[in-house]
Length: 139
Image (cartoon, rainbow, N blue to C red; front, top):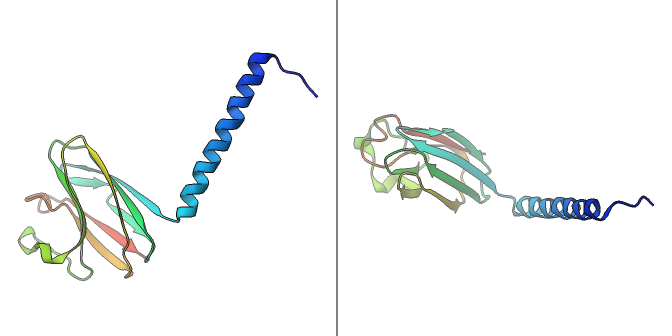
């Protein structure tokens, strides 16, 4: 057996324990089976602007507001795609991450059971008409 100096043994022990901790944390995420959508809202876009999740499985939206104005992440009911902000009403909202101030982040979890491609918009007045739109594919 090779003997390491005391400082090297400590460093090796920390490395091994750190690796085990990361492996365990990764296992917990995999066991949860969920998907995390990470997106940044700015004036006037989402980055990225398209996402894919599995039908019937919980997914998490991690929304960061990288702009100077407040922003939302709103999923419109399947088949209710809008072309103008004048068509937007609360009746066609399937789910939403409510307005968050500039420079802040929030995380929320959802489940969508029906497969399809859903329109995603920012529901703050004038933002959709300025081009703030994306798509969520549920497969």
